[in-house]
Each structure stands twice: as structure tokens, then as C-alpha cells.
Figure 1: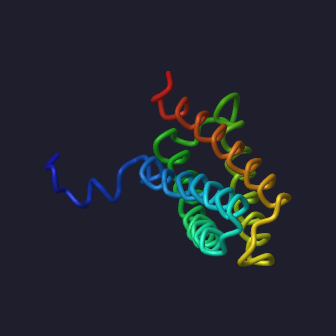
Figure 2: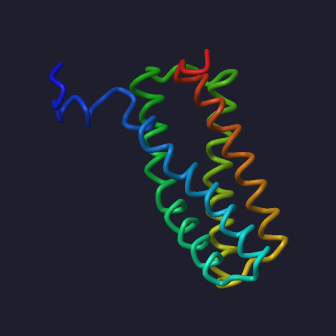
Amino acid sequence: MHFFDLQHTLLAKHAQHIVLVHFPIALVCVALLFDLLALRWSDRGFAAAAYLNLSIAAAAVLPVAITGLLAWKWQLEGAPLRGVLRLHLLLGVSSVVMIAATWFAAKRTRGSSSSWRIAMEFTTVAVVAVTAHLGGFVSGVNV
């Protein structure tokens, strides 16, 4: 394998899932931070930054979900959905739904941060964190 082998890089068995997954995780966490700052200092700039982060996270989570399913098929060769793998899949779907719902709520209340939306974002970040932790076990990193 050559260091700059584009075919190997793009067609890896893990389907780029382990590369792409970090973007929505970071974006959702930073969106929560910006919303907390916006709520603390009543700053619409922080609220706008939070909305932008959530928008990008909502867009980025779709390729992550697709590559996650492809990685299951290619890397794990369609292993039966049991134990940690099944829980990771269920929480992954929940994460996608919660990120989309949080983005939709942010879109409806654009320019302001409310305490109910902060609670929703905290819950989303918690589910995403547990999903990521379990993904580490599935990939072998947290073993």
C-alpha cells in the first residue's frame, strides 16, 4: 500500500465512517457551547453560530449514517446485530433523529436560545456521546 493510494483511501473497508463520524460529534458539542454562551450573555451572534453548527451537523450526519451501514456490511461482513453492535446501530439512528430534531427546533427559534432547546441539545449530545463510545468498542479502539 502506498501512502497516497487514493483508491485504497476512498474504498477502505470501513467506508470512511471512522473518518467522517467526528464532524457531527464536534459540531453538535460546539453548538451546545455556543447556545449556552448565547443564553448566558443574551448574544444573538452566539445563537447564530450555534444554528450554523447544527445546520452543518445535520447535513454531515447523513453521510455518517450511510457509511456506518456500509462499514457494517463491508468491514464487519454483515455480522448479526447483537450486543454492542445492535445498541450502536439503534443509538446511531436515534442520534440522527435527535440531531435533525434539534436542528429543526433551532430553525424555528432562529436567533435566540431558549432553555428547552438547551435541554434538547444536552440530551442530543449525551446520546451522541454514548453512541460514539459504543462505536469505539465496535471498531476495536475501546477494547
